[in-house]
Image (tube, rainbow, N blue to C red; front, top):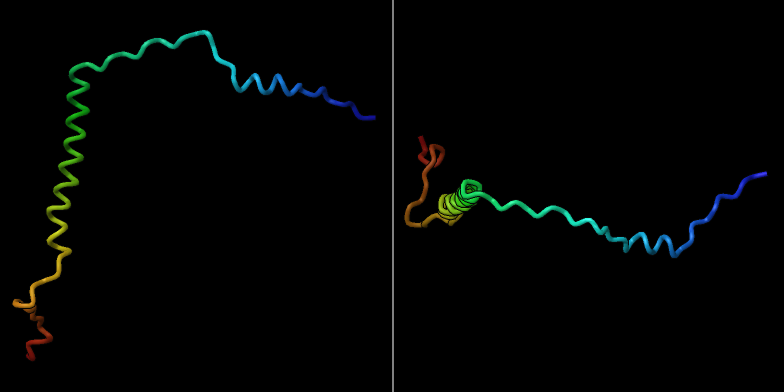
Length: 78
């Protein structure tokens, strides 16, 4: 015949979700001045890149003026 496995009481399973350790983690180290400067420099570089792409990209996406029509070689009639 087959052996029946022991069932786990439901209260034990419910308690395992709420279990909290009494061991506190060590306090986080404070960032040094050089680390703060590096983080801010990286952030400024990313923001400057996004602003630069907008400055260069928005004029390229705007419609061209009708007062300056483009001429191609095919439209010259040569």
